[in-house]
Image (cartoon, rainbow, N blue to C red):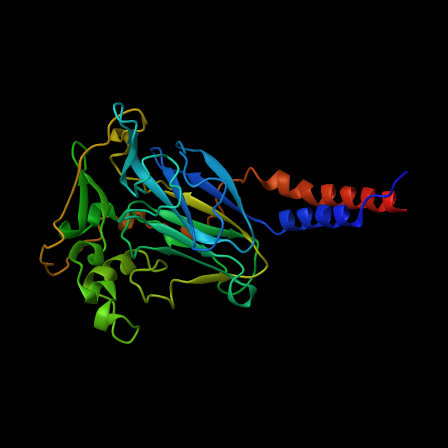
Length: 330
C-alpha cells in the first residue's frame, strides 16, 4: 500500500491546528424584540462567514473567527425590508448596505459597539464596549476561559435611551416612548472638543465632556470618549471564547419593545434627530433608569453556547485523525 504524502499529512495537521486556535463568539438576544447583529472586520483582516443576520428574542448564534481576527459587533434595531424596493434598512445601527448582510460596511451612529483585537500585543486579546459612536441598546461582553487580572466582563447594561439628553435623542415616529437611540456629542454637534480632533486630537488636550460623563456615570466600564482607555480596555491571555449579549438579563430592553416592528417585510418608520448644528445646552441628566443597574450583571457568563459540544469533541477527532495518519506511514 502506498504511503501517504508527507505534504498531505502536513496540510491535514495544519488544518486541525487552525481549528483548535479559532475563537468563538456567541451572540445572544435577550431583548424583547428582534435584533439584527452587524459585523465588520478590521482593515486587512478577512471577513467572517457572515456580516449580518437576525436574532429573535431568546435566540443565540455562534460565529467562529481565526485567532488573529479583529473587528466589531453591534446590534441593529427596528429593521425591515421595503415591499416595493426590496431594500433592507434599520432605524438604529444601519450599515447602509441595503441588505441584511453588512458586507464590509460599519454601523451608522448611534450604535453600541463591541470591539475586539485577538492575539494582539504580547499575545493578548483586547476588547471593549464603546459608546463613542453613541448608544442604541445594552450590550454585555463576557470572556469564557482566558486569564489575567483584566480578563473580565464589560459592557453597558443600562437602558440609556430613556434618560438621554433631549439634544442627543434619536426618535422614531409612532413609538411609545419614541426615543430609539442616544447620539454622542461628537455626532450631534461636530465640534473638535467633542470629537477629539484638530487641536483636541491628543490625550493631553481631549478631556471628558459633560456629555461623555453622562455615559461614563451610567456605564463605568464602557468607552465614553476617544481617549477613555484606562478604565475601558480589557485584555485576556490564553485565547478565551466570548459571549456577546444584547439586553442582558434582567431585561434592560426598550420599554416599547412590544411596539417594535419585527416583521422584515414592513417599512421602516421615519427617524428624526436633533439638528447637527444645534447649540449644545448644559447637559442635565436624571438617572431614571438606575433601577436597571443590577448586582451581578458583570458576572453573567451568558447563555449556554451551542459550540460547547463541538469544542469538547474536537480534541478527540484530532487525536484519532493524527493516529490514523501515523499508522498509515508505518
